Length: 286
Image 1 (spheres, rainbow, N blue to C red):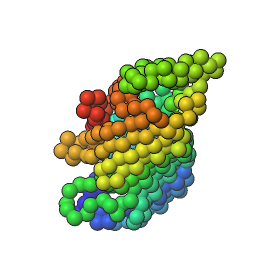
Image 2 (tube, rainbow, N blue to C red):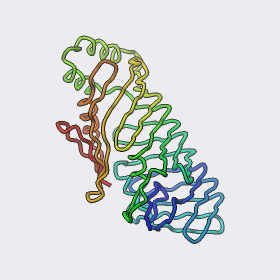
Image 3 (cartoon, rainbow, N blue to C red):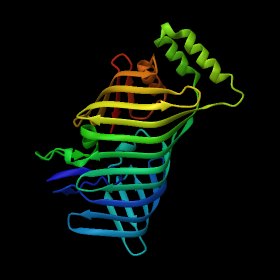
Image 4 (cartoon, rainbow, N blue to C red):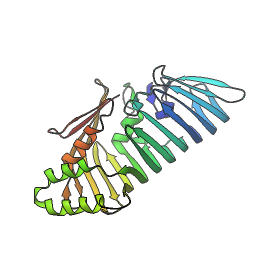
């Protein structure tokens, strides 16, 4: 039997088939390893039962590896591995929906705010999706939804607000693009000389993984209005409990930003995330 680890409903229970889940209109928050949320409805299939809830409250703890689901008449506690939250300090979410069928596993949210000191990143119309039919089922190894995403998955967002521009990003870009110093200086001056600060807005974000190959694109809006594109590889290491991303190339319009992206991620000082700029790798511990 195979153990499936499924996002917020990632349990240690073994399943013969991919579990069916439908959680509607979750709203809640996560801070310092624990969170709480409220949902209108929830439906999920355990090995011995089909369970439906309405008007439910959820509490979850990364340290205790637990998820408690309560409605006015029922309380269910599940063993949950929330190690995928290691890189996040805090976040809030609205209208979050989780659904799995025999074909697809999907998480959507109309508003997701992620807090990484000293910034808040606002994400609108967010989606993660993978074709669960691609998850291998020919052996007895534990498999996770992450395996399915690496094999064939996608991440979409209609809008991502990074807040104010960071001058150090332009320093990185200048070092990486010596042939475009004048163009980058003019762009930096145009942004920093505005009477009203222009936030960095990313639109139409679309990242896809297919059999370990990674491709993504997004429109950097506001004053820049250039397409950002990235190519790479992504794999998981079950022995070390890591996901490793190798960034082959990243471009912002005509500018190379491969090292800029790596240095920017490194400067965020995310917990459980390490960056090797020379090797062009981002390693995430789970």
